Length: 171
Image (cartoon, rainbow, N blue to C red):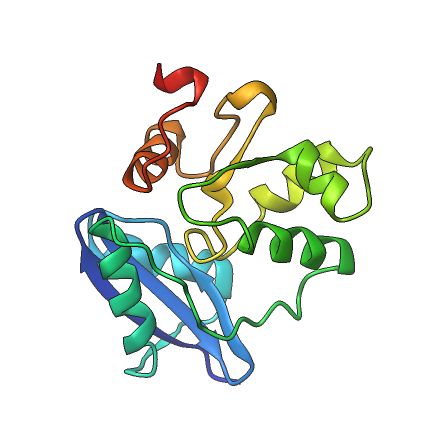
């Protein structure tokens, strides 16, 4: 199956998305250049994606998001690669509202696995759809930032963009 992609320059940097006939497979965090986005997509997709205009609506949504506008990402996702546990975690993360945060422990509770906060963290860390599945909205206990694949500066930038101001590291 051919993997297709689209890319847009936002105020945060270039962001690319890729998918197949079953839905969106991956997105990149903001990159300083187009080549960096393509390299990031290759890490997730494996195959060389081909350019496509089919992601135009999603790319415009990402542009508006980068401008600080509340956006509900409506793209159909392809999570066929995920285990049932990973899928439940990513679906819970996807439901965290714009401008809100949740903790790894709260997500573990929400999916009925109260002792699985560490496993939730691993599933969140492996999220191939950052921003669209807003893993930056998941923080550690007591409002600490926790980790983030794009680095804590980017995580804090995304949270501030959404108006989150109460985190311990943001004081």
